[in-house]
Length: 367
Image (cartoon, rainbow, N blue to C red):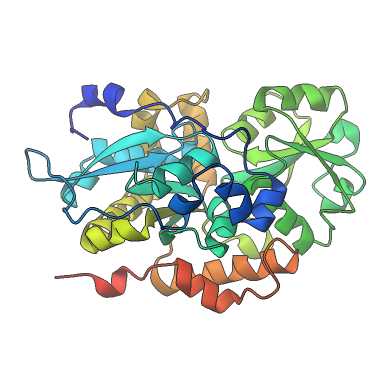
């Protein structure tokens, strides 16, 4: 991406069209490749149809390496990545990024699988099941933690005590997606059976508050800024019950930098450089969230105002960005927990799997 401010209007493209008839279903997440292969992308997802170009990444006129980065522009947690260009962080690592915005997991997976993007930024839980089935991508660095939560209505008997969720219905935008997997794990950890003790119901984002008001649901789950704004507009009725910083997850990353294995073969050093730039941007955010928010707001697709963005960034853990063994250990923990609730196959070895899907770029840094 060119460093000039005006270039962003051209670089922030709409998400890659969803070429499937529907989103990943829970059955698809649990059975993995079967659902994906039915859309004609199976070969791509498992690395059989896309081959990396032997050519290096293109260079800008200034000699910077150009990378295409797929990320959810409306998610406040990516603010450091966007702001990193403005503040010269990517340039200092020799990189000129261009951004493609995705809104659905399908689009993120497709851009990486079909080499429409060199880097993807997304939730760990978006990648886990496809990676178990052989999806041809590596996770190389965590970026932060704490951008998802469940909130509930005090008027409908919900309190900060997680047991108040028993017998209640939880709404979310995709009952079969990464939000479900995230909170099913958290509920299970806290003694709530996600399949028996609660019910789940799916609604589009704008209808979740209405469903709560009609008492069709008593709580709902999702990511910021949706959840933060919902609480702000609820006149004190919505209370946070759980977040992905709860309990043993308090120091874990929830979002990651991912790249295709073939992309890694093109130039490992450039992927390492991008990861280090992303982590430097995360540290900037941890230390000065307002500085990051001011720039991100200009190009955000979120409805949050500047003060909202600053508060959300402050609530997230942008000082948590594991690489190397740290990332591998966190993935192993998630894998074990997914296996415990039956999302992963009982035969999946968490240690072997976590080593297979992460890439130790730090150890292979070239001088």
